[in-house]
Image (cartoon, rainbow, N blue to C red):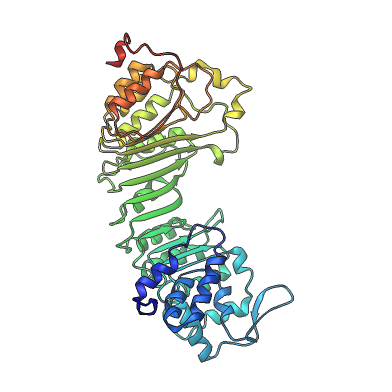
Length: 451
């Protein structure tokens, strides 16, 4: 069959076979598409669809206008000599309707002046500027650009990321977030700060988001336990990524524990306090969760902790994990984000008091469906071959196992090559291992632990 007679779907596949959407330099690919669009009428439409599928900033849209409509002013900004005419709006729509993904950041917004912004906000159509937009990435929190942002919000959008970098939310941000439920009812993925400038605004945002019946993944900022619960009960939500705001566990009312557990299957929790995380996990059961990531990140603290973790509190912390999640948990990542280089001179990494033994990890043994376990921050030097064998026999489906190997502890490990034999024997699906061990010869004939 001649190439001109091929269906459009096949042509699109041929045109994109060598495209790498993750590449930082896609200009050669775009140049090839532009050449194809000019080659013949059959190639024009599919080539333009691919060329305009992902757009970054408003400059490409303005650049398609006839010569003389736009120009670069003395400050280096893109501006207009006059408003758009009806024919020019049709030309813009010819390209804008092909856009499925749009991303813009602060530097790209700085390239356009107020004339361009006012013109784009005056589109003759009542629909979104990009009527077929599916994915929106907006990385700027300046409020005078919010009216332009609203022209992009439409019912076809399924994924939104709003990179608001300000520490405290404003009323304008709260009003914008509260409008998402009505403007973009088909959102499935949302990444933004979902906390308002006041408790009343936060309630309004949560109520508005509850109207997003298809929302399944939410990535947001700092939440209190009650704010977490309000969002976690969204009807279709399955994945929630958030930072747990530090709170006084002693002042928390006794009726904090929810009567109905959220139906989340994935939770990604970051906090700067180990004790707050422990209190949260003990009071918010998540039995439906299949993937849990807990990060203790000290970056938010005003001081550098004297110790990487409190070994006396780690046992209770691990118990809280076993109480929060059900045995059906499949992925568990627990990480303490700290720089070991800060503890070298203090002798912390050689201190035996940070060694954690079998009894600390044992509460995780009921998680019999684990496929991915990451505890790479621990000092596991007290766990020997026999103890590891007991542990991994409880996790026969393990595929990835990170067990103290990422930390630079100077306490000699008790595990030997025999531990690897146990891993291989009892976890046949295992393909990634990271742990500390003592590389001593193994007597395969006389070592009873191998059998």
